[in-house]
Amino acid sequence: MTTVTEKIAVEKKVLSENDRVAAGLRERLRKNGVYCINIISSPGAGKTSLLERTLARFRPEERVAVLTGDIATDNDARRMARFGFPVKQICTGGSCHVDAKMVERALDDWDLSTLDLLIIENVGNLVCPASYDLGEDEKVVVLSTTEGDDKPLKYPGTFFRATTLVINKIDLLPYVPFNIEAVRENARKINPNIEILELSCTTGEGLDTWCAWLEKGVLA
Ligand code: MG
Ligand code: ZN
Image (tube, rainbow, N blue to C red; front, side, top):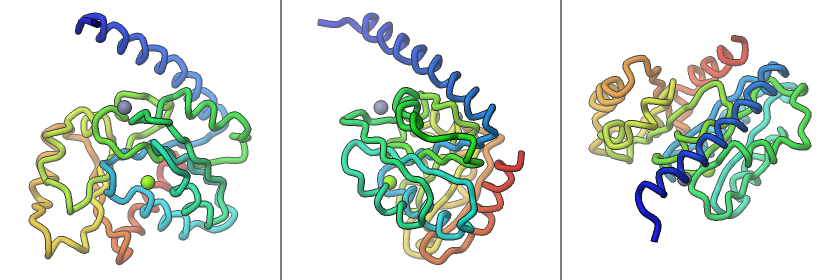
């Protein structure tokens, strides 16, 4: 039987190996002038819908690509490929997060000098994805109004590491017991500097601000 100490030692080793690979990725992205974001949320918060709406708004000459992680199926990659930009599915084969090695493998045959923006959609999970550095510039956490407004307090690690919180499905606010003021407060309790955007992929409200936020990152 493995002891707790042994388990912690193994986890530490895995994470430090991941950090090493992520550092290499970050260097490669930087050299090629690629701005990279890592999107994290629970299943069903609307990561893929947000990316569909985002890609639909981009001009065809936009230099953007998407890596999308799921435990199984390439459904999300097929949904997003319709918009004509490079999209690749990362099938984690059971793993509940995307790690740096998977990103490295997925980028193997992509010429990063042709990109300005790389979006990674992580596996739907608020626990461990935030612990795995993927070489990204920013982690974005998406929370929808059908979830609990205390999630920032329940998953502090993710909200602490994210630079930006996107509150999705705000069109449902009149129908759900979701206190948006409490979410803002809880998120800032964990991370006083977190930027908060509010939008609806259904009505399109807030998408202009989201696209401007992305553009700001690309230009920086
Ligand atoms: Mg998805
Ligand atoms: Zn995991």
